[in-house]
Every structure is written in C-alpha cells, then in structure tokens.
Length: 149
Ligand code: ZN
Image (cartoon, rainbow, N blue to C red):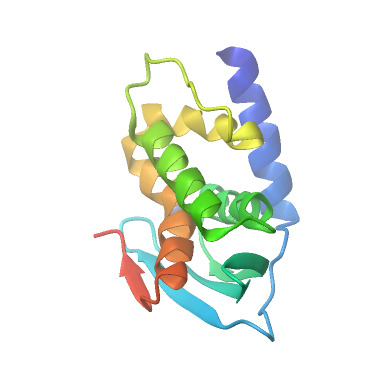
C-alpha cells in the first residue's frame, strides 16, 4: 500500500502542475459545471460528442490538487470512448473510491485511475476525486450544474 500511495502522490503532483486537457473546448456540444462546496472546488467540463462517442473533452476551473488531478486524468480516461464505455468507467471509479478501504480493487478498466483508491481512506477527499466525474456525467446526460452537497 505504501508504494501505491507514493505513486499516488507523484501522479497527483504531476497532474496538478500540468493538468491535461485544461482549456475551454471551442467545439463542445455538451458542458456542465460542478461544485464541491466542502472544499471549494469548482470546474466546468466540456464534451464534444460525435455519434455517441467522446471525440474530445476538456475542463477548466480551480480547486485542490486532488480535484484537479482527478479531472485531468478523467479527461484522458474518457477521450475516444463510447457513451456506454464512459458510463461503465464512471460506475467503476465511483464504486472504487466509495468502497471499503480493506477491499481489493477488482476492476480491469480503470488502469492508472486505480491510484485514486487511496482516497477511500479520506472520506472528505472522495468528493474532490469524484467531482469531475460527476460533472462529466452530468454533461453527458444534458444536466448543467452539479453539486456534491
Ligand atoms: Zn478538493
């Protein structure tokens, strides 16, 4: 577990410093805003959907390192995926970070996202890690604003 948390810290720091897909998407046809009042994180997720696939995705906003890194990695994870694949990934990520910390992670789809399993031990941080996912999910389903409260 200590190796995983070291990796977790490195990846979070890296994505926080250089967030991927951190911009407004000019050709977005879906977007949503997400707020996490508990921590003060807020972000906007932009999606360009074509034939039910995520052609492009980006985000803007400000927040803590975890929320930013999670958003950055979320955009990498969903880009190029179909809507059902994104839905599955969203479910798996959500199940992982809200699960029992003692339980093994079973998912094979999550890849690098598995490092966020570490937040299970810090319930306050779960909302930071899931904010971008809820916001992306809302954009995908034509909702405009989500709040973790
Ligand atoms: Zn946060």
